[in-house]
Amino acid sequence: MRKKKSIAMCATVFALSAMLAGCGGGSTQAPSPEPNNNTGDSNTGAADSGNLEKLVIAVVGPMSGQYSDYGSTAKAGAEYALNEKKEAFKQLGFDLQLSTQDDQADPKQGVAVAQMLISDPNVVGVVGHVTTGATITAAAQYEQDSLAMVSPSATGSDLTEQGNKIVHRICARDDQQGSKAAIFAKNQLNIKSAYLIHDNQAYGQGLAEEVRKQFEADGVQVLGFEGVTAGEKDYSAVLNQVLAANPEMIYFGGYYSDAGILIKQAREKGFTGVFMGGDGYDSMDLVKIAGEENANNVIFTSTVGDVGATEEGKQWITEFEQATGNKVGIFTSFGYDSMGVMLHAVEEAIKANGGQKPTREQVLEAVKGVKDYQGKFVNVTFDEKGDNEFASVYVYKYENGQKVYIGEAE
Image (cartoon, rainbow, N blue to C red; front, side, top):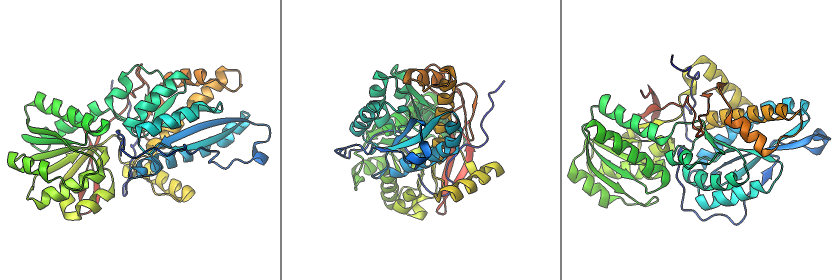
């Protein structure tokens, strides 16, 4: 029997967010001197909390810098979910608070944030991190103190292969996303040759490598596999190699900021074939950078489905936007469901502890034991590695300046 899938997996119908994607990967920005410790984002004052015992859930991702849309959209969904549960936790005797932290999608800053959160005894769980590079480095820190994390979007396959017991994610892995992207390109787009480029970061390179594996297994000719430096403004050198090879498709593993430049410059050099990438493309800024006409025929996979595809999803979008004043973005819904999973586990840990504040170890055990959790957008059962057995991959394209949902990648 097939596992029951969730109603409609999330992603913004309109704007952006990736990376991390959902993505994964890390920026080269220098870490800020001090992590931003915004404990109590949810505005619970002392007068309200009274003698309630404090419970803090951190949400971590890039809240500043070029990938901030990924972190901010995940945070918006997570905060919305937490606010919905504040009264229920108050009835249990706890003041539930949110701590928002900025890791800048930088692995070094991920470590700094993790160490700061570990030092706060009120922090019992982490929603995040958002990008793979920062998540991997932070996870090694959380492992030392049994602080459980649930990521909405860190897709790097290596993340759950390193033996860290605290790592969990509700999204699909890059080996799932990459292989399904390659299968879609071969079977649905009839691609017979491709040139693969990546940004030399954990997310982008990992994704491109998975695409290459599947292409080679399926007999699609890989005409080249090259890395570039993220943040460059001129990709002429690699694009000249691409055009000389004359592929039917260019696959670029990386984020929208670099993809937009690559697409624009490739089109200007005369490339008329298909561009494809992962959830790091999920941003209307890609269209702005590449140009609307150039972005036509750009296809990308995502670990997040179209929340607006159902009436229930449309209603949730309306309620969320009215309550928060924010637009739904790429990781809003998975931020929401990741927080839902974490709070469900914390509640279970409280019950198992006789109604008393649970330890981090008790919360971790409850997170590891999550089975058949009915999320709003994705159901969740964690396997022994911390991957979600219900995770899926979806396909989108840009057309006339709009993001268009194609369907689930089979």
